[in-house]
Length: 98
Image (cartoon, rainbow, N blue to C red; front, side, top):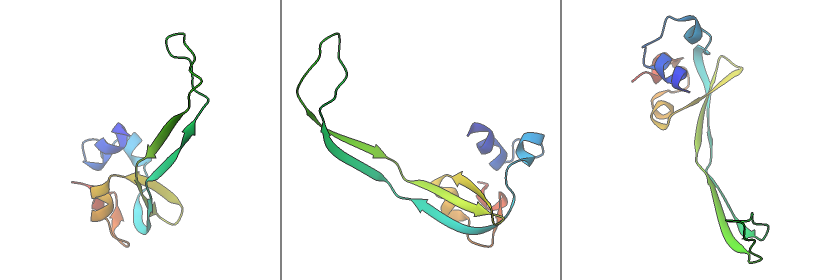
């Protein structure tokens, strides 16, 4: 992820590692929505050597993710601001640079 970020800001733009990142027009945009999973967790791990038979209410959260489809087949995950900046038809990674 750090390498991709350095490629996007232009710091390593002409290196071999950056040349392997997908390039081309953005053909589609997709948001993977945030996911909340709620439920009772009764199969808890022992804490400090003690096992608890009590159930706890557990909420898990997966943050929202942003994807651009580049050149018909390649998908790249981008930051929120890059997703907003790049429109269908723009050239990636040029549109994602700050």
